[in-house]
Image (cartoon, rainbow over all chains, first blue to last red; front, side, top):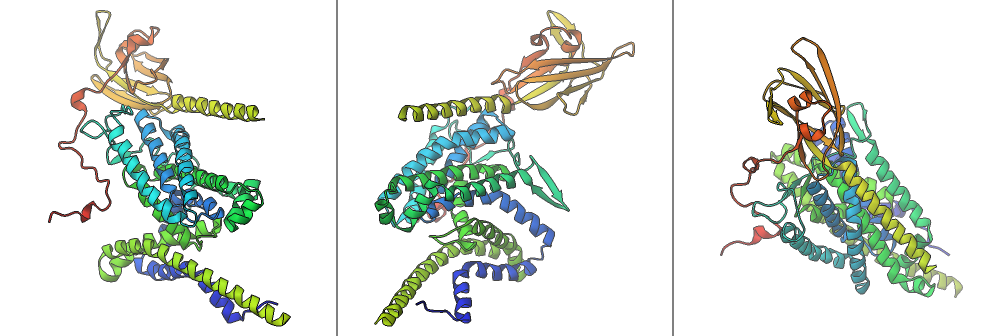
Length: 371
Length: 158
């Protein structure tokens, strides 16, 4: 016997399950007319954001499948990607070969960092998110040590434009003019006035297909089993710890590639900050798309990028038009980024408790019938 | 089985290393300067051309008058330079030569008058490595402040 929900209850449950996307839809519905932006402008901006961020956000899906929550440790991969970009800028490798070489350089670094991160997360089961978040801060210190003091005296850097005037360490910003929009402009199609970077979309589509295929493989099924119940998975003979480490390694490597795609679109590397910002914004975008700590899919990625970045685009102008200050919009979007993560985590916990209570009620009803 | 796995892994690493080397050679960027200035080759002075059109690979050509210098950004090591000029008898000439840029050399300079005077000679006669003079490297007046701490703004002098 099951407890049947009424239509009203089903609507309420749908709204409760999709609170964050609905909230964002409402914000955007108010923000768009207030901003005064044209549909053409908004569409072209959204396409730019989709191209820039989607790869990074898709990299978060596999650890969620393995039950490790949102991988804030993706910043490790982002750092590896940036190291690759610093090297190709120093060597003067440009265009697609430069991008691919940066990816090749980032891969072993990402794998090593992912393996190390996975090892630590295995020691902190149940607290993976906060642990990976702190690992990101710790590794940021190591990254700064290497980039700020190691590059120049220990790791040779030939290009003087990259090095700080004191003679060692990389400058605050690195000009990526050699690879700027190299992938985006590889196959560029224009629909009306909106440019569509086909090659980047193809790459993102390939990653999505990989994730879909991966879920069906033996390893993907193992990850799903580990994500549902580690003890049951272990009893079934799945190497739980190894599977978890592999999921983090895959995520970190893809985050490195994602960072390279992200930065080729922007054209400038903010050496000491880019990677730290990207983790927070990627996680927030995925949550805005309706994902939870335990469940996320490709639909959440694209919906999240569209809604989250739509809010980013319209909020400064909406704030300016509303009270005459664009700064309000700036504060608003930072507040929303952190707020959305908090709301999502709270809602996830509430939903989990509600489902547990519902399961209890169902069980009690079944027992009553049997009695 | 373990030996086979190891062999496959080593082969993959080798392929990646080869791919990286290829990418390095193919993607390495160089600047080719084209200079139309009087030069001395083997103790003989060669005057600059009054008007010459120079192109590297399939890039748009530049017209150079005496003492003009321009640049082409190229990737890879092997390139073609095309020089078109009209001589004193109003006859048009076109010289096409291929040249190789040393791998780690960022800038090379083609001495156009030397190339026109010696079109069949070795590239060393009309192509020279070029280093940016140290005075041309602009340095910041003061050392750049690197902000690595997001919370640095919270630290104030009490």
